[in-house]
Length: 435
Ligand SMILES: [Zn+2]
Image 1 (cartoon, rainbow, N blue to C red):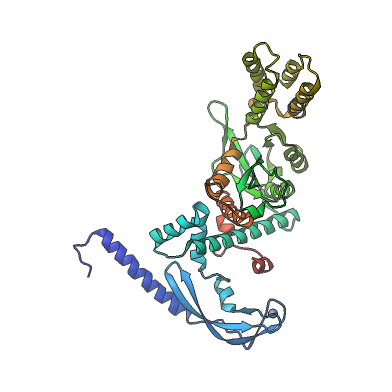
Image 2: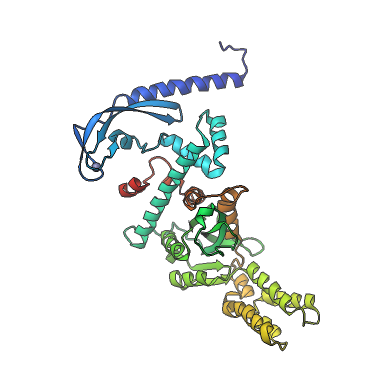
């Protein structure tokens, strides 16, 4: 027996256990009042009529522990499909977890490995489910969120959903930054694909991520400050065209056309500018200065055999790059007569600067109070992808990684309640059936 002499820790643990089991019994009693019987026949998903075939038990694991349900069961003779209308009423679908526990599982499984998530659920909530169940449930939640977000994006592009303008005061600038990284996948996921995929590492598939955020003002040193909580993300494993479609929808959802200034920052890859020119042609396009510096180092190394003082040459060119004086860099690099392969290599390396010169007017962009580096998307890649999906020993299926990244994206975008929480609008019934 518990007594007044017991420590608070002992008491609260005992009280929680008592309340939890009383809650589970109460929940089971409440649920027993309804079994979902809707007459001898019910409409099957195939469009025909399914016949009632008695009552079936199901044990659902809830945040209060396991609860037994009795549900009227219907069976379709045409398509051999069996179902309980009560399951849909309760929002439990095919899984064995309740909506509340599914959400907790999604939250934990999105943050840490499935094994650690199962341990957290046991330690924090006293719920015992296997890592495999965490994985299945979290990925099902992610798949549903992905489908719902995809359906919303399609509806926005088709203008069947018209987003509201951003709330006043509208921040001064909207940024769109894009980048990619390789996620380690199972061998079966890279078979038959060209060797160099994404970042070129074997055994990875590239995920492309876009981050949209706003800037309302500058700090005391005149540097732009990202508005807290203003970030939203879109991602895909399906390549640049799919990402462009998702970014377009997100840009429209954020009310992109209402901002005075839109800024697109990328690493210099051509597809990013093609996308930007298509989606927001009036935007200012900036090549990330850190990528530009890497290219400059590469250029200096290429010419080191002929420049009298390579270190100083690089120093001067770096200052020119910071100033956005790209023609000076090109002029300096062309000052030496090269031929053969050295000359064609030089042409290729300078091509990067020639093509992007107007996106490298760094001093001008700084004067306008703009970011010139892609730190925001690199931070996003790290926080959303690397910390969860690129840990040692991980080998994902592309679908599984996409499901978990969908949860992380919606959470980081502040849209968890729109797509993951119980009662979220969720996918259309047709999409739900496909999950
Ligand atoms: Zn049927």
